[in-house]
Length: 243
Image 1 (cartoon, rainbow, N blue to C red):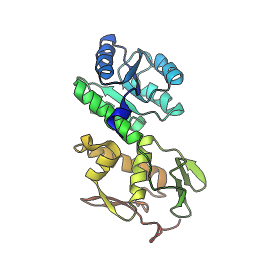
Image 2 (cartoon, rainbow, N blue to C red):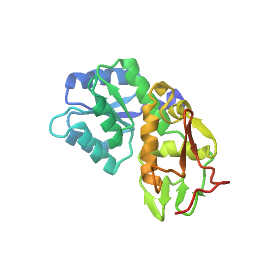
Image 3 (cartoon, rainbow, N blue to C red):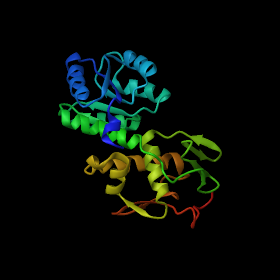
């Protein structure tokens, strides 16, 4: 995605601290983004319906509805990318946010450069095209995928994937039969800026296995190549074992 195409993207900033919202607004508008603000969870959900933002910056610590509760409600109605704003050192908050469907997190305090870089990275990867993977792909009798329609069929039923899970699956299937390293997956799915965050890959591989594998402890689709990375079974040559 060209940098110019990121300008004028609408960013919904949700934080109960007005000074923080002003700081974020000043820096994002300087970089060409359009900023919509909300100071609590209810306002955030209303803005989401009214203005359909391209990305949400969502603070964890808010009165009434906290960031995790707002994130759950957002994910019920939208797959818009969400970056959580967390307190320094709160590792549990970061993991919890990813589990709830956040695309990334930024730890306070953060620099304007880091903020803009993270936003651009998430926008680039969520708006990337799925070139070359068209039509219904039959992995086996259990699993069928249509990347054009963003539909995953498992045993005749649609499986709901979060945006990051979907992107990860896309890159695995696109390279079926080939081993993709942790660094390659980080770069393709999260962006080059995340090369030092290997836990993202492990966490989301586990999520995909929980949703797609008959036995996640003994996967047949997403295979681990120890010390190297992961490989999606080459469904065009060696079919996974049938249940």
